[in-house]
Length: 215
Image (cartoon, rainbow, N blue to C red; front, side, top):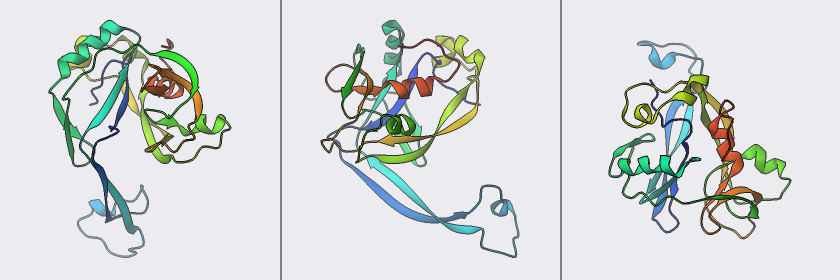
């Protein structure tokens, strides 16, 4: 089962804070070459070992992350305060807890040159027809929301036991700018005009095709 915040809350991920200590630990593990073979599940295996290859694993070690949740209603965001001090496992081997929840921040839609605070869909970055460097590119997945998900209540989304109406994942390619190199992309952002620049394309993508309203 999958348990998510209601679809009207768009969770945009968590990213290393600007001044926090961070590092990447890289290691290699033997793994499968193709996703459709089942040698790892067999008690005994013989024959061609060419299906095995080394995979690169990267572990992010970071002191502090900043997460973003956006929605149309400031009142809805007050429920997020109830999650302060809660923790959970994240990623492969990680653990994190919510140490602080900010005040509700009003964002406005603007087209400006700025570095995104979150990931941005690579398709939208390319469509902007700009020469932009310094971004890391990742193969990512977003939830495939079902029509019934739009009716999920806050009770179910925060403290309920009812699974969220999603049907697996949809792949997409995302770009992330870990450093500011002086040549930011010009995009449509939801911004506070100061530190937060959330690409409109990212919000629209993660909300899914079924959720019609926009911020």
